[in-house]
Every structure is written in structure tokens, then in C-alpha cells.
Amino acid sequence: MRSHLLNGTTADGYRRAVTEGIERVAARLAATERPFTGITPDELAPRFAHIDLDRPLGDTSAALDELEDVYLSDAVYFHHPRYLAHLNCPVVIPAVVGEAVLCAVNSSLDTWDQSAGGTLIERRLVEWTAGRIGYGPAADGVFTSGGTQSNLQALLLAREECKSFAPAQRRLRVLASEVAHFSVNKSAGLLGLDRDAVVTVACDSARRMNPVALEAELKKCALEGTLPMAVVATAGTTDFGSIDPLEPIADICARYGIWLHVDAAYGCGLLVSRTNRHLLAGIERADSVTVDYHKSFFQPVSSSAVLVRDAATLRHATYHADYLNPRHAAEERIPNQVDKSLQTTRRFDALKLWMTLRIMGADAIGDLFDEVCELASRAWRMLVADPRFDVVVEPRLSTLVFRCIPDNATADTGSAAIDMANRHARRMLSATGDAVVAATTVDGHDYLKFTLLNPTTTLEDIAAVLELIAEHAGRYLGEHRDHAA
Image (cartoon, rainbow, N blue to C red; front, side):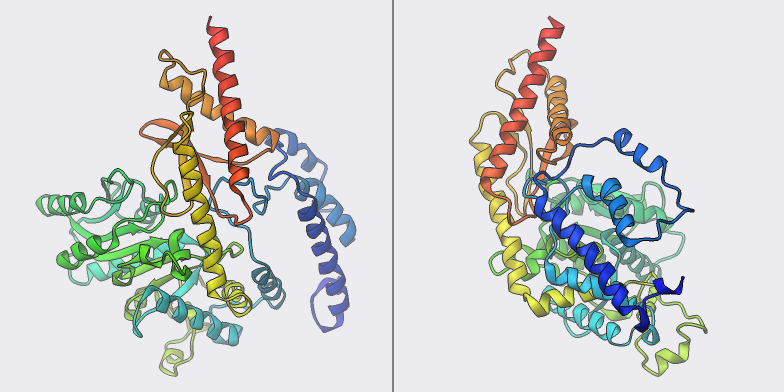
């Protein structure tokens, strides 16, 4: 079956097969009227029961027909303006072109002799991003699979830097806000730290880390004999889009001599904003920064990076293998990216961002992110003016967290009933496919969440979804009140 191998002799077949696949996707995108069909796992699973993976279809068209049935027809489409749930963005076409190229060439970014120009493209993009952060010429970094891996590598570097001047038997601590990403706790576990190694720092009313509370926790660590190895500040929390006060936190870290990591997986889009870049003031003082281009740079998954202010700290991720990156290669200044990465074989994800910058430019990406941030601000004003909705905080980025208090709620309606009404409204939106929204818990109660990352979403879309939420929640309360009676 060598006819399926991509090479010079099969180029025409490659062109036909890929074109047919693109046509199927393009047709589906053009015809999609809802972000989701509402299909349930129990409804979809039987379609897979008859598929025998040991008996190939042997034909591209037949395989694409099957794919339409088991995937494309019921996929969740992030490009639809009423997909309002998670940190999933619609993608820009230049990045998709880059994805098509990198898949076909299949470079691996671990060593120079597997990637050549790919290595230099990634290095140039790391340099560019470091410059946008405000780092100097000593900075460096590497692309990763996502924010979780970036945070893990940053905390690995912080741990090793801490161990270099502290007794190994000291118990290490990581300080992060109460709304920091869960990967901070996961990373601590993977790094072999104590189960209680992550110290939760209280937030202010805007859901930002409170610097006074941070300093209090650091003093408590000193009294307990534990050693803070890193502070994780968040520039764009997953639930609220809140941005921790980076300058005061950096001041505290400098005073205590603690590694500062900024998780800007969400807020990194501000690096290319022409109007809101000031919201990241102080990020240049961080020892490391996480950026997720596949969130606010409108890139396909995966596209992320971890940046460090001092390239020398990346040595903690360096291991040499004679068959791959022998020590003499570094002495000969051969640029092997595996020397900086937790991964070995690694996709050429940098190409997507490269194509985006070379075709669209950074300002265009920043303008798209500014659009969704402005939309969130306008939607917030609409929500706070509507007595049916309780909004948690004014957005700094593009996230709105709220819950519906239906018109038919009375003084006797308990919080538990309101919680269930909001859960029901979310389930109904998904079941009908009218919209996809997220959910979270705030102070022990159920709330809904809009994460706005689609510049084609309008205020009218948001208003329509809010009306549906109010309708579903109100109907739920009415029906259950009647049943209780």
C-alpha cells in the first residue's frame, strides 16, 4: 500500500485527497447554523459500534462519508457566534495554511537535523514574543503543547533554581491565587512536592490576587519553616479573566527573592493589543511567562510557549543523548531545541503563528482580541442593567460570569433552586444546540459563564442567548414550584 505514502510519486493523490477533505469541512462550516446539535454520548456511541478498524474502507470518499456521520455532523463548532463556553477560539486562515504545511512536511522540532529552518522560525518567534513581553536579550523560551505544560516547565525551573541555594530537606511551597489555573496544583504533584505545597492566596473583590494577602502568606511560610519557591500570578484567570496586580506582586517577589511566574495563557493576546497592552504592566519583571497562542492569538490547537527572562535557567530541562543531542553538539553551537524542552519529538506548531504574522500582522491579531474584550464590556453593561442577572465582576478581558434569577423567583425561592434552574438552562441550551455556554461555581453556588473569543459574535447574539437562559430557568422554577405544591 505504498500508494498512501506521501512522497514525490504520490503528490497528485495527496492533492486530491486533501482537497476533498477541505471541501467537506468548508461545506460543513458554510452550512452550520448552530454551534452544536445537542447530541448526547448515548445517542452518538452506537454509530461507532459497527465500525471495524481492522477492515479499512480503502477509499478516501468513503472514509470522509463515515467521518461526516461520526464526527463532522455533530462536532462543536467554535467558529459559530453563539459558541460562548470555554477558551476555544475560531482560527485564522493563515494559521490553518501553516497547519496543512507542517502536517505534510512533518518536521520534528527536537533537533536541527530534523527541522533546519523550522528551528530558526521557532527561535525567531520566541525572540519576538520575549520582546513583546519586555524581556531583554538574555531571554529565551520554547514552544509547548499548551499552558499546562508551560506552567509545569516554569515551576520545574523555579524548583531547581530554589534548590541551588536552599537545603534540599526544606519543604517547598508555591503560592497562587484562589482562582489560579488547576495546572499549578497538578504541576506541584508531578514535581514531587508535598500534597499541601500550593498555598492559596486570597483575592480581592475583582478576583485578583491580593498583594497584602500574598505577603501575609509569605510571612506565614517563614514562621512554619517552609520555603516559597515560586509565586504564580495569573494574567487572565480561566473563570473571570481577571489579571493579578503584576507590579505589586513583582515588588514582593523581588523583596523576598522568589521566582515569579506569570500565567498569561489567556491574557497573552494583550501583548499585541494597540489599546489594552497596559493591563500587562509588570509582566516584564517575571522570571517566566506562559503564553497560549491557541487562545487569544486565534491559532489552532496546539500553539503555546514558555518564556524565561534568563536563558541560563533553561539548563534545568537539558539532558543529552549521544544518538540525538550529544554534548559536543552544544559546544559546536548546533541549535537543538530539545535542549530546552520537556518534549522530545515535537510538532512544528510555530509555523502557524509565523504564517499568521507574515500574512496578517500582529496588529490585526491584537485588534481581533480587542474586539472581543470590548464586546464583553458592552455585554457586562447590559447584564448589570437587567435585574434578572447577578454578575460577579466587571470583565478585564472577555469573560462574563453570572447567574439568572428568573422573574418568577420569590423571596421564598432558595439558592439551591436558583442553582438548579441555571444548571437546567445550560443543559437545555446544549440539548437544543441553540448555544453553548460554560458553568462554574462561585462561593458555593452555580453560575454560568460566557467566554467571548469570537469577533463575529454580536451583542444581539448575547442578548438572544440571555433571553433563552431566562426562559429556560424561569420555566424550570415554575414547573418545580408546581410539583412541590
